[in-house]
Each structure stands twice: as C-alpha cells, then as structure tokens.
Image (cartoon, rainbow, N blue to C red; front, top):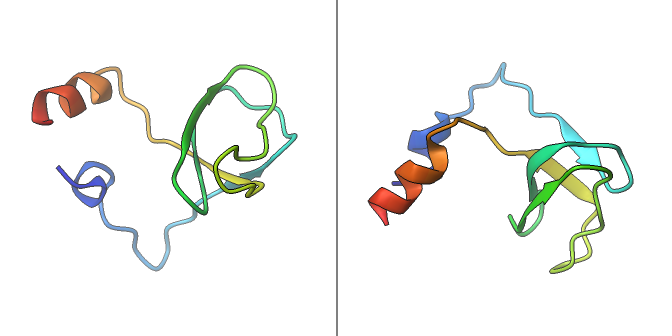
Length: 72
C-alpha cells in the first residue's frame, strides 16, 4: 500500500508542519529529505542518514503498524 493512499493526497490548502533538529518532540517522525524514520521522546536529532535537520511528524494510528505488516 502506498503512502498516498494511507495519508491521502495533499491538496493545495493542506499544511504540513516541519520540525527542526533540536526541537522538543514526542512520537514518530520522518526525515524531510530521505524519509528516514525515528521515534523520539525528547528532542529531534539531525538525520543520521543524510544530515538533514527537518522532520515531518508521521501520521499515527493505533493500527497503522499492524496494517503495514499485514500488507507487506
């Protein structure tokens, strides 16, 4: 299943908040450059894969991980 079908296509009026490395955050985030995923409970790091400093909070659902495993 593609990311677009899980999150829906972004429209012209949709707003995506990007978080900077060093900001306090809690949850799952994806690197804005390479899509590397992290789960944080304190502050966002610099991406260890590409050194990007921008993060997008991943859409969360209590069943999203189970769905991805089922569809793999």
